[in-house]
Structures are given as C-alpha cells and as structure tokens.
Length: 609
Image (tube, rainbow, N blue to C red; front, top):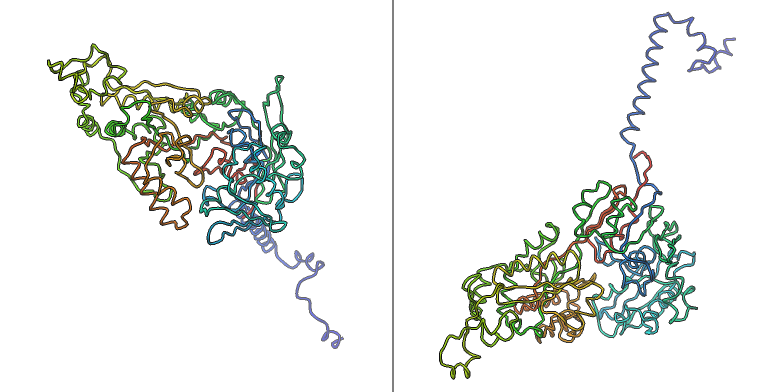
C-alpha cells in the first residue's frame, strides 16, 4: 500500500465529489463569506464588462437608406458626350460614370479609372494605365478600347459633342489592353483636366450610328462604371420624367457608397424646388434660390452648405456700343465707385469673396490687389477728364464732343458759354458746354444681366453705387437661356453683369486674348502685351514662369479696366440633415458636390473599438 501511495500523483484541484462535501468541512460563517465574495466577484466582472462595452461601443456608418433630392431642369442626356449643356445631366452623369481621372476637393485632379499616369518631359504625351478591378455596371471590365472609343466619339463631328474643341489636336493610341496614350501637338501642363470625361462602354455604343446617338435609350438608361447605377425612372402622363432612381454599385472599384438609393425629382425652376422642399416632397435641393436662402437656412431638416467655386462675377464694358466707355477715366471711375465689400454682403450675406482681378486666390500667379473703392478718387477721375460734377442736382460739365451721345441730354439742356457763334461753330468739339442736369444724372448707361435673383440684386446695388458719383444706370434683364443668342453673341450691351466659370485648371486665354473677341472675350479686349503673355503660358512648362506671366496679366488688366471684377460667388446646396459626413469644401462645378459621396451615410451600426 505504501508503494502504491508513493507512486500515485496527488490531485491539486478538488474533484466534483469533494466540492460537494465542502459544507461539511467549513463553518456556516465561512460558507457565508465565500458566497458573498463570489457574488461580489461576479457583479464586478459584469460591471467591468458592461463599462468596457459602454466606453468602447461606437456607431459606424452602415449600408442602407434612401435620399431624395430636387433638381432644377429635366434629364435628357445622362451621357458624358452631351451632359455639359445641362446641370441635371451633369449631376447624374457624375454619379453614373467615371473617367480616367477625376477632380477631388482636397487633391485637385487625381487618378480614378487609371492607376498610373506618366507624362513625358516635353508634356506632349500622357500615358495612362487602367486599373484591373474596374468594371462597367453590366459586369464587363473597362478596357483601353472603351477609352479609345469614347474620345474618338468626342472628336467625331457627326456626334456633335460640345467637348470636341478640347481634343482637336489630340491623337489617342492604344498601347495594350489596359494602356492608352494621348499625344498632343503642343505641350500642355494642364491637359489632365481633359481626362476626367466619363468612359462609355464600347460594346453598347459601337452599333449605334452617330446621327442616332442623341436618340439612343442609353442616354436615359446609361451603363457606366461610377459609384451608382441606373435603377428606374417614372414619367407623367405628358411623357416628362418626374423621378429618377439610382442604386449603389456594390461592385464599384473604389470605396463603395453607403447610401443604398438616390432618388431625384425634377422642377422647372429653383423656386419650385424650394417649395417642394418646404412641403417635404424632397429632402434636399440641388441649388438654393437667392430669394429662398433665408427660409431654407431656417429649415431644421436640411443643412445649407456654400462651398466657393471658381465662378467670378464681372461687370464687362462694351466700348463699341457707347463711345463714352472708350474713356479710361470713366471706366476707372465706375470701378472706383463700386463698394465691392458691401455688394458681396448684400448679395451673399458675406459668403462671397471680393476680387479685384481675374485670378482667384487658389490660382497660380495670384497676388493681392488693393481695394479700388474710393468715391473721392472716382469724382476726381471724372473731373480731370472733363466730366466735372458740381453737385448731385446741379449742372454737369461734359465734353462737348460727347453731348450728342448722351441719351439724357437734349438740345434745350445745352447752354452756350460764348456769344461768339462763329468761334463756336469751328471750335465746338474743343470747348466745354454746360449741360443743365435733368431729373437724372447726365452720364447714363444700361446694365444688362440675366434674369436671376442674384444678378438682379447685384445690378441694383451697383446702380445705387454709381449714383453716388452722378452716373445713372438702367437695368435690363434677359432670360438666362436667351442671354447668349440675344446679348453676348451680338454684343448687344453697354455694361454686362455676368458670371464667368473656370475649369479645374483656370485658363485666361479664351477670356482675354484678342483672337477670342468673337467668343468669350466679351469686352473685345485687345492688348498685344497680354496676347503675348497668354500665348507663352499655353506651352510653358515651368510653373514659376507661368505664375509670373499670370501676375503680369493681372496687373495689365487692372490698369486697362476692360471690366470690373466684383466677387467670387459661392454655391448654395441644401442637403438633408439626416445625411452624415457631408464635407464639401470646394467645387469646380455643381456636380462636384458628389465628389465624395462614397463617404456619405444615413444608417449606422454598433461596433466595439
């Protein structure tokens, strides 16, 4: 027995049978103490676990939810070839399609469908490689042939794409199944902004004749490679599309969006969209009308964001329609009489940014220019030029050679200052004549602008400003859709109050080069020094040289005053309060509000961190 016991291993932990006999070994006091201690231990463990869960439990974004937004206009071409002509089409195209590159509010022009970009030293060849995981909504991979097809289609005049001028001197070559090269005739440091066009699936579009492309069903039932795909649309009895549904693309190559459905409804104008928001027919609206801004901001169901965009508002002079505007002194006085700070506050309640030249603070070559507002200097400019003002209601002395051109001056207003009629007949063009002031000041111009609440309000403020130096103005409004054909193209204006919108890489050439006087050079500005600088920077690769040239252009325009640069306008967007993580610091185009839509969310779920 001793040998057996010596080789047996003693049990260090009591068996279940031995635990059952514990009450026979311990006293009642000891048993009570053990029970209390055990209870305390259990409660402590539960408390610690609960505390950990409470302090480490967080809500994280989850997939799900639906957002309904009101858009101004009707969808027609959800197609990168034609979408540029409509805000609605650009909005939907931005969500459905993706390009080789894209614009990001933090990074600028950056890679999208392309995973690599190589630019040669001369900046005449841009080579891009398409990422392997990029697919269209039908499951087909995005290949180089799709890129070639898209850009060749834009270049084909039969398709009549408004994007065609951007690629007039560009050749596109397929290097392999996933690589394409864009070959430029002239070097360009800013060509990457033209690589953001959405890519069409060649397999679906190749069999559609170019002349039939605008009529194709794919314009309203598009197949792209973007974060959202077409789901459905509904029409009213008249055949107009009233709602348009997109659903998340769960196979998106990037970060898949979290909001499950985007539903869009369409309205004739911004006021109608604002009414729909007020009546809860939609949860957000694409643009907030100027007159409805205060009411919309008071709506607790939405958040109004106002990112700045490269949109400048200018007062452009047309010297051909009124000879008085050929006088630099008059243009300078008008520039000096406009209180831009008060104007920006009156129109945009401080959200707009005052500007004094064509370059914005984010642009290369920008230098801060002094505020030109100075009523005393404006009056002095007119005095020195012969437009002497004695008082607001008193007579004004104007250049006699310009009397016939003043609409507010009649023969009865002219009082001759000399009795020598023979001398007057020979020297009238050199003498001054006193013009008795009628009910309105002698100098009178017409301000023409689009019939939008913002621009009409700005015109009224300018009108008040100019009265301070004795210049009267009439305000003429034209429907926005007719402004180009009735006002801009025929140059049918004296002073035009208009916005100018730049792209991702601002280019001053179309607006201020003398060769563009029949185009976007609205002032018909002609300065050979500015022309040379603009031509040089088109092909200049050195960023510092480009910046210096742009700074010189800014100074020359400030000296010549072909226009008054007023303010950089914000964009007002009302998005549903229920949508979280909406961050829109800046945009190039209203459609860019969706640049980071993949990070927006409605639903959440619990998780431990």
